[in-house]
Image (cartoon, rainbow, N blue to C red; front, side):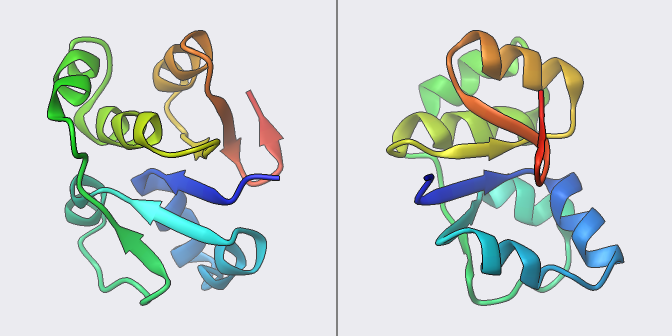
Length: 112
């Protein structure tokens, strides 16, 4: 079981449109986003969504050569967490994350 999940903007948008952001809280112990994701989402977040900056920005800079800023920030934060689950919608970012060894989901319950 994953103690935390790190999500990208599209996850927040999808669940917000369904008025079901609460599902994330009910499934995962901790839900993290990066400041980049918070800026992209650009709406108030529930207090249980934890924004966290990447501590070592060099990983994020490296990832930016391969994927977009939001996804790069999510993966850079995932590098700093213990056994995180990463939920990404972007195919290129999912493939990249899988190739470097992350457990990822496209949406809740949907692998690859």
